[in-house]
Length: 286
Ligand code: G1P
Image (tube, rainbow, N blue to C red; front, side, top):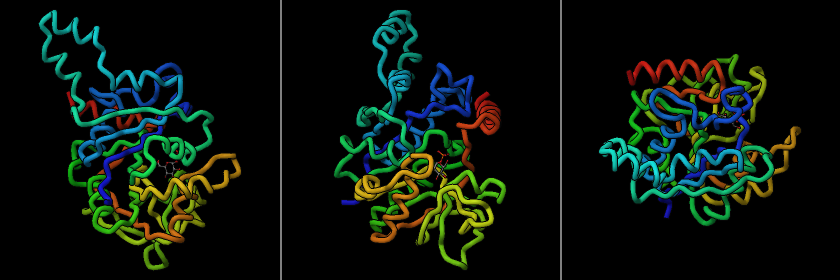
């Protein structure tokens, strides 16, 4: 059964690009308009049918787990003082959705973080959502587009799905980049989600050597065998286990597709793009 009900969200990172804001507040809890960054990412996962979300976390980031847990004292105080709708709004997480967490231990890269979820997700096909990346919730339909499209494609084809979006040449070195063959080196922005077979990925190439302009956005749907590939992935020059390298190896034995993205994504893990996103979300919610 290729139904995807599990998702992994790696949240153990220091957030060094967001200092000093992220020194004592996890970057995932910084505000975007009226809600913290990770709230949108969890809503996206739930809209795509995810029922069990695994946070791969760190002891310093317990505030994230607290955000998704009920605060009984606060709930009682709000209800006793008649602020019923405020209390109800805090219980937005659907009853059939579970959020659990597991520690990453040493921070050895994104691939290592995803692999750390194995004790909970083993045997399940699963999605990965990077919490820095927020897809515009005002102009995209989380229930049908992007991650929801990818889980549907996976159900129908069994091919792992990697969300990609064209980026400008000067930004290409910040991303994993897809290789689709000579005829698809330059891809125009899609108006609809489309799945295309991919032949490889390169993590953060120089623009001149990039195999295409299609960058990995931060949404993935994997066949569970990716965990075995992660176990076998050697660390890179910086000593990090890259998810991109494991996907590149998976492609050698199982079909993997890129899914082209609809709408805009915001990088909330970098100060200047976070501030742009902050302004946009605030304007939408004034
Ligand atoms: C990670 C991935 C990269 C992807 C990017 C998207 O990089 O390794 O392939 O394109 O997320 O945001 P990071 O931004 O963590 O360095």
